[in-house]
Amino acid sequence: MGRVVNPHDLLRLGHGAPAFSNAPAWVAASLERAPFVVVRRARALDGRVAVGIRGAVRGERFGSWMDLQHVEAVLPPEMLKSAKPHQTRADLPPFKLLLRAITPICDASGLAWGPTGSVGFELASDCATVTDKSDLDLLMRAPQPLDRSEARTLFDALSASAFEHAIRIDVQIETHEGVFSLAEFAHPGARVMLRSADGPKLVADPWQTSCAA
Image (cartoon, one colour):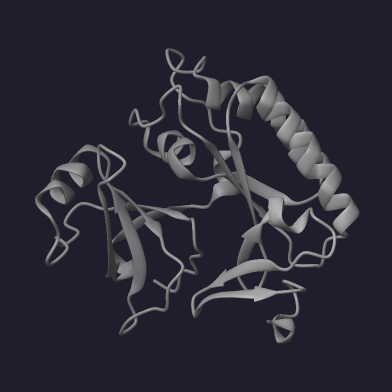
């Protein structure tokens, strides 16, 4: 297909996609309910992309690999930030935080961003996944280095908004090298845990992995 996919992208499977081998029994039912998988941060295997499937409960998670020829559509997080939940679910706290509070803050950062986790999954699939206790997970793309003081200002603004809505927010910053937590990076001088397809490592500068500890 020639498509390029990235970690956290949601992939909608087309009709006739093969079953995942060695999958637990719940996987088939989950894909029948919502034919979506998420791209995992792992190396491709024999030309197949690493993907994850989520079930009906938090403990149901399954990782595998698949050929992109079975993908009908690719939905990156930034495509989902303007999506709307079903009107009967829009008042759930995670959606209220996303739609009414943090969108202007994230847009003002100048970074490409979007929701991941249960919020992103429900916005993509229209399958009820979010609860009033769900976190709001965000991905922000920063191909160029961020100033730590600016990162702190962004973190403080997002944290204050999340506190007002009594929702936990987790913001991950994506670079060309991997992903790290905004909360960690917002503390001056602290090394951060950079997660890449080759595994995690502590780094002083997430844009220069030669600085690994």
